[in-house]
Amino acid sequence: MNISENITQLKQKIPSHVTLVAVSKTKPVAELMEAYNAGQRVFGENKIQEMEEKWQEMPKDVQWHMIGHVQRNKVKYMAPFVSLIHAVESERLLKEINKQAKKHERVIDCLLQIKIAEEDTKFGMDTADALALLTSETLKNFTNIRVVGLMGMATFTEDEAQLTREFQQLKSFYDAHKERYGFHTLSMGMSGDYKIAIANGSTMIRVGSAIFGDRIY
Image 1 (spheres, rainbow, N blue to C red):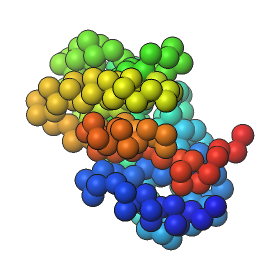
Image 2: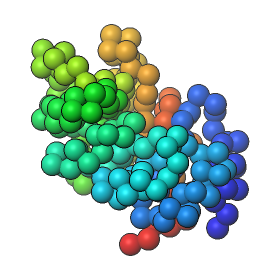
Image 3: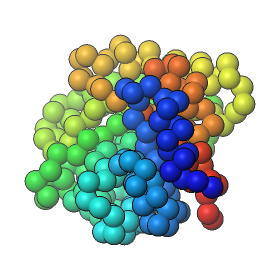
């Protein structure tokens, strides 16, 4: 498994406006450093404590993205350094992120996770709830967070028509509200479906196994 070759090949395949998030969960720092030495600077983790340990060890120009489901009581551990939180799905979570960001005099960028998959296992808000949150007075008072876009996870399927439909659904919601809310990031697409996601307007893909090989359990 040649991590640096995988990074190079991926970057040749994806358009320059698409950000590659290397999903490094469960992988040792030595493997992350191989990706780093190949020029990768954006890494995604799904466990806050694991991300914090890696942040301590890795060079400080790395951008850390929290891509997994976030427990509110763990936000304090990543507040000093996290660059982007992908999976925000409630006002209560935003409130906690804002509170912890304030303690560190930071503004933390967040994405609202919209449920587009048909699977019950996927998290996310529906579009009506997302709109209610975006237009709420509460959000205006959160001065230490910035909602910069949306994130979605498609159904785990080989059916390209279904994937296209789900990604298009999120893209049209994003486009409808992008200017009003100053969105610039649409995070959708993973190792198995990132090409379809990019074809349907993704600006950020989350790729793990296509870089690092299969996950270690």
